[in-house]
Length: 135
Image (tube, rainbow, N blue to C red; front, side, top):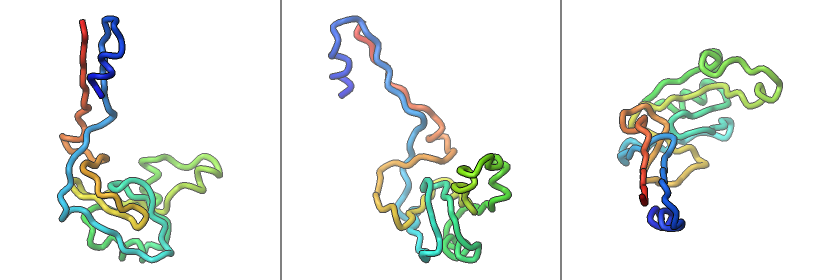
């Protein structure tokens, strides 16, 4: 595909392909499937998981997952206070930050991907760039 893009034009061109972050492989033993009752709503990324529900249910569901649970008042330091009714309606009760080199699979996600993003490892914060020139 990169060669096709480069050969599309007969003009002297430079092609740059980039991404907003890198990816990292996560070993199978560090992929955690969440088991939780229907009273919890789990959404967001597999490494920064937003949750609505009771604290007791959240603690039970995430008890075996390495990471840190942030409560809503702590989230406001990172996300700011919601400034209107719409933002209040989507503001989560909790956020679970999964420890680096681990991911979770909420019930609604099942894809076994080759690479994951969302962490702060050295591999992931490097921005991949491919540059080609037909000069």
